[in-house]
Image (cartoon, rainbow, N blue to C red; front, side, top):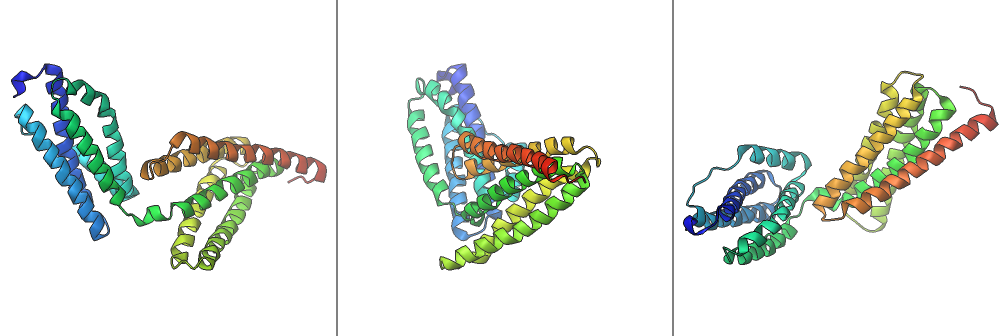
Length: 293
């Protein structure tokens, strides 16, 4: 059957065949470590779907292929570190680039259109069935992350000019940050209990952990730079803030099928705006209070 196809069409089919086989193995490996019988079965069904697609394309190429070990290792590692839902949806996002390829292929292989439609509908339905605990508490993590970014970024920026000493700034930031971590976690626990939720402890844990990690990351530049390089530490802290926002926003945008751009700029502009205002508050406070540290 491969003789009836143009070199371009055959090349596209070979690429799809390789991708389907590799993804079939990835789904099977991820399923072994996924929690919950339903999640395991869903991932295995996805694996069988990809294997079936591989067999369809093999009829055209006549080739028996081997899965790509590097890709399998990469997505298996992502699944272990960041969760299987994120890994699976990240992998499926990569397939969206093949839309134009299917359009080119349709002229020579009409059934490819039907194959693609069935693949998308079935895989999307299966992906919606995935249920990972960590994603149920994304709202709690966002609450802790947002509050820590806005509050601590503003505090550190204000301390930077008022104190002009990286060690004093770091000490003040840690005291405020750790105290705020317990306060935020406690508030989340009480809010969840008042709503009659049985997962109040888990919810406040996710909030507190997200807050504490953010505190440590933002304070760290002030511990690494020399005592008198407080401006450099401030710039580094702001860069870390933007990086945290970018990483977390990308994670949630992939795992929850949300827009990355709008959420990123919203969080970044709010945090930077608060930092700038707090920096000038620190300047004014130092000037009018006459405090010299």
